[in-house]
Amino acid sequence: MLCRLSVRWLRPRPALRVRVLEPSLARAPAGGAKRSALPVWAVASVSTAGPSGAGGWYEALATSAPVQGAEDVLLLAHTASGLPWWGSILLTTVALRGAVTLPLAAYQHYILAKVENLQPEIKNIARHLNQEVAVRAHQLGWSKRVARLTYLKTMRRLVSELYVRDNCHPFKATVLVWIQLPMWIFMSIALRNFSTGAGHSEGFSVQEQLTTGGVLWFHDLTALDSTWILPVSVGVINLLIVEIFALQKLGKARFQKYVTYFVRALSVLMIPIAATVPSSIVLYWLCSSFMGLSQNLLLRSPRFRQLCRIPLTKLDSDTPYKDLLAAFHFKFISRKSRTF
Image 1: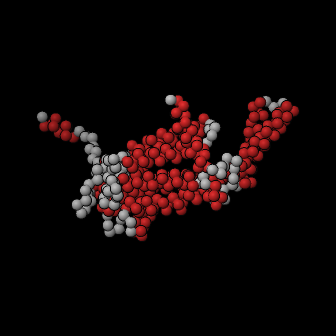
Image 2 (image 1 turned 30 degrees about the vertical axis):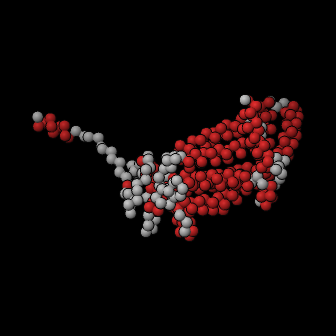
C-alpha cells in the first residue's frame, strides 16, 4: 500500500492555470465610487499570460509610447480647459480632427482631383498606344499575348510618368488612412486604459473622475451605455458617411460596390461592439464620426475647395448639397414610393 501511494504522489501532475488580474485593474476606485458594470474583457486585459500569451500583443500596445502620448494629450486637454471629462473628450476630438485629419482630407481631395483631370489624357494615350502596338504586332508577327504584355508594360510606364509630372500619384491619397486609423486606435486604447484604471496618471485617479465625468444619461463614462443611444448613434452616423460617399459615385464598378457593402456591414457591426465598451470610448467614436461627417460635407463646398486650392474637375457641381439631397430623395424616397 505504501508503495502504491508513493508511486501515485510521485506521478507528475499538470500545472494549474491561474488567471490573475493586474493590481491596477483589480482594485476598486477609491472614495466610495461605484464599480463599473463592464464585461470582463473590458476591465482586464485579454490575458496576463506573459509576452508570449494571447494578450501579450495587446498589453504591449496598451503600454506603447503612442498610447501614452494619446493619454498625455487627453490629460493636457482636461487640465488646460478645465472642462469635465465629456467636454475634454469632445474638445480633444475636434482639435485632432481639425488640426490633423482635415488638412490630410483636403490633400487627399487635391490628389484625387488632379488624378481625375488626367483621365482624358490617359484615355487619349491608351487609344494611340493601342493602335501603335497593333501595327507593330502585325509588322513583327507578335502573338496576342506578347502584344498585350507590351501594351500593359508601356501604358504603365507612361501613366507613371504622368503622375510624376503632375506630382499626384494615387498612393499619396492614402496618407489620410495611414494617419487617421492609428490615431483612432491609440485614442480608443488610451480611453480604455483610463476607464479601467490602467492609464498612467500622476497623483490622481482618472478612473474616479470618469465615473462622474459624463453628462445627460451617461454620467458614468466608465460604464456601458445601457440605453444603446450612443452605440446606435455611432452606427447611424457611419452609415450616413457611407451613403453620402456612395451617392457621389455614379456607375461604380463591381469591386467598389462590394467595398460599399462591406463598409455598410462594418458600420452596423460597430453598434453591438460599441455597446460592450465604456461610454468614454463610445463618446469618442461618436464625436470622431460626427467630425468625419462634417468634414465630408465641408469638402463638398466649392468655396472651401477653392480655399484649399483643390483643382476643379468635370464632376464638380456648383450646388453640391442640392444635388446630394436630390440623389438621396431619388434613392431612398422616390424609388420606394414607386414600388408601392
